[in-house]
Length: 512
Image (cartoon, rainbow, N blue to C red; front, side, top):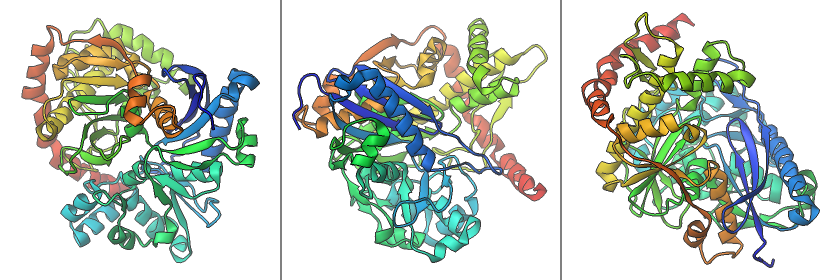
């Protein structure tokens, strides 16, 4: 397929709550885009599920919208497609790729017993060494064990296919059961050093090699858009499809982070950050992921209670989903006038447990310093500051393994907040630079598609040409106050209260 100067590259971003299809040009400009929501179900405490078929339906709606915006002539300029997606979410299907049970979403935390049981049987260190992930409820491995042990035990007795979001969509697009190694590794089933599924872990999971998809490297051609898929998506059949990466890895690439010394920071539903390294190593301060760049790894941190925590606040104030953005905008304007430290209010944002560095699924959020003179805007500011303080904890841990970090490249919905970006710069005492686009995750997929189809000589060259830097924020006079707040208050809160949190979790379970 000829790749001219007018070529477009479709980056599909199938996230937790929406699917976006964005057509990118060779300079990294978004020429057209479409978006469609994806329903998310919370059928029980700690349970988060989706109908995997809605991923495909949302992709069809989003891609048709983008194609309509391009027009017939413009849509024919699409030369390649790549996928990025919510990680750890998976679905069990039959041999034809039809779902047998609702997909378990990355937030699903019903598998605490399975985490403890497998860690006791195999050893935390062994699981961490092979997979790069310290045992916790996030990797798909433990959710799978819970699903087959407790939720749907009948599925343990029949052949299945375990598909991450990339594999499910790639199968619908191309007819092949294939995924990217950078999409499979968050499942916890991959031997990171060998860059393939671990025979040991598959055995522990009760899976055979035929029950997981084939693996491809990011940017590797995995097939082409089939006729039925093309008709559903409103694009041409035969467009090549290239292996993508999980949303965190793609976001790093879309922010232009391809080497050491720069950390990407995605302010999304979860707060995810990472740095590139050529060395595979494990540490409790981060989880080790495959990077979207060839032969590299990401030392990645993850706070599951990200902008979700702001949505929680809006819901607490009675704002429906449609009105939450208006409510949060008003709170931000008010919070700008509140002094640093939110008038003595500090929040620890462990709303979905804590991964690095404590790896405690029983951890919960902490709100310390409540007084009668505070209002919702104080809580809003405390959330922004609490996430920034937690990011400081994460960044310090990564630096000890990776070396100095000169700046953080920020993207995601939260990056639109100038107040939050400035708080981050002050708390971390490092420059914060907005990525050229807040849609860096989709752009990362677009870069892989462009490199794969030969528009550039490689992924790093494509990233250099298609990414840019936006507004910057430098540490200001408040950094001294935040240094004291971090050292003298924040870092001690979880260690002081972790025992009480664990007991509270046990009491919560006994009351059900």
